[in-house]
Image (cartoon, rainbow, N blue to C red; front, side, top):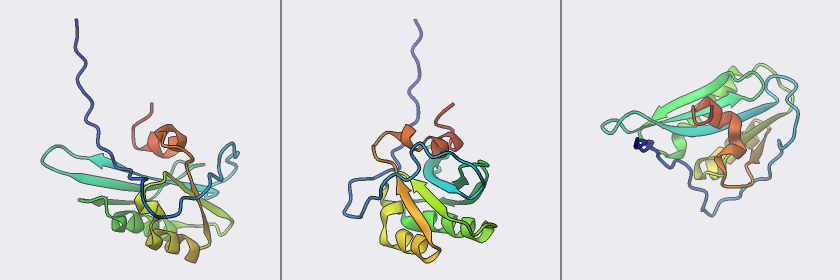
Length: 144
């Protein structure tokens, strides 16, 4: 009999908050070109001694990482730095949707203000299921 080791699991999404949650705009949407949809997520990296969080903004079509930030906390600042890096790499000026989970970082006033300033439409998962944001989760290595 083999005992499977427990997976090192950290919760990075706090979706019980006072901020507005947006509708899922990408459900069943065909991806036809780069920079049509960006997906964002945060994942825990490091061991017990090194607590770090990696915020990623990934192009859903090409799977290119457009922006990233490594931080020692789950504060909104790390996600904003990743978004800022992604915006600086943006090549196309067509309509862009930013899709994420309903985490506090993405719903915060500062993050939503940054999206609005660049005319990027917010979209969020409609449930607590991590597979609802499967593209971002796949990049983070949570889905095979």
